[in-house]
Image (cartoon, rainbow over all chains, first blue to last red; front, side):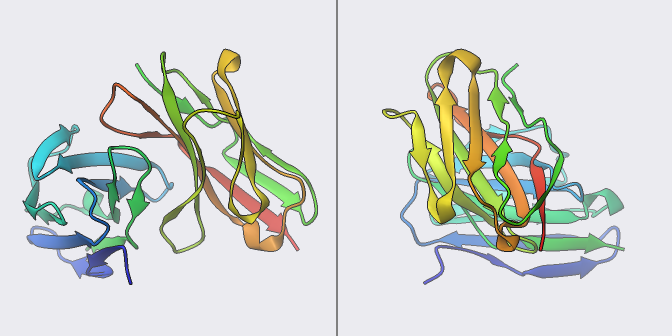
Length: 111
Length: 113
């Protein structure tokens, strides 16, 4: 059974488009996260939700909007995609905000 | 500001060599410490973690790490590396008062067969 799953795995799109990435965890964790990993492997936290409530909102353009319909899901919607948005996006979840369990990642390529 | 430093950006070793990757953090107070590994094309997986107790922590695949509070360090070690250890390694820290984990910039480990 997959603990943290993301869809799609690959996403290739044109500049200016709007896209969404979905994340689901079946671990029963209260906290979920979105990270962006750039081409140099640097991992940067973007958002965190705890029980559907936003608790971390780093300096991220407001073109990025997370949505948590329930505590098992945290989706990421991106408006007006730009070249610089190309990266691998990882979803993660954790119990009690400690160790994190990562999803397989979504490789976003903006052309 | 709270931060995590990994001094080695890229380490190249031959098989059977010993490994030590450095990690230093700048949090005050009580912390939880982690090492994650990311194999090529894969997601991050937990290697080991320290919450409390014995400062020498053993993880999966023969890795271990030592928490030295006075040095704010949590270095990762393995006595004999294998080609399959080729990966990116991330140190991470969260203080119990914070709501997020801070990751270091990662160390790329390349093993020559």
